[in-house]
Image (cartoon, rainbow, N blue to C red; front, side):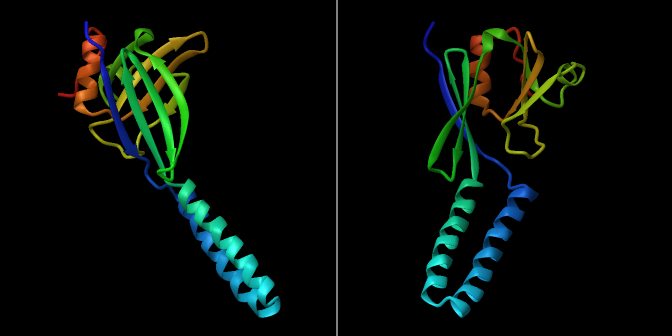
Length: 166
C-alpha cells in the first residue's frame, strides 16, 4: 500500500467578535492620535504609532486559516494566524474514528456528542464533514471542510467508515 498525503487550507469566517475587536482597535488609534498629538505633542505621536502597530497586530492575528493534512491515516489540523504564524491545533488517528460523513447526514445527526471541535470555515455548506471519535471522555465530533481528494484519500485508508456526499 502506498503512502497517502493530502493537505488543504480553509479560511475561517470573520465573526462579530473579530469585527468588534478590529473596530475597537481603529477607534482607539484615532482617539489616541487626536488627543495625544493635541495635548502631548511628539510623545502623543509616538504613542499613536505604538497603538497603530497594536491595531495592525489585531488585524493580522484575527485572520485565521486552518490547514488539514492527511498523512497515512492521521489527520493533523494546524491554525495559521495572519498567513504568517502556524500553530499545531490537534491530531486525529482515523483508525480510532467511528464514522466520517457529511455533517448534516442522518448518520451524524442521530449520534450523541459530548464534545464538538469546529475547525471549519464557519459557513454551513454541503462540503462540511464530521469525524466522530470515541474515547474515555465520550464522543467527539470534529467539524472540517475537506476537498474531494481528501475524502477519497480517507476512503482509501478506511473505506468502511467514510460516507461520501451524494
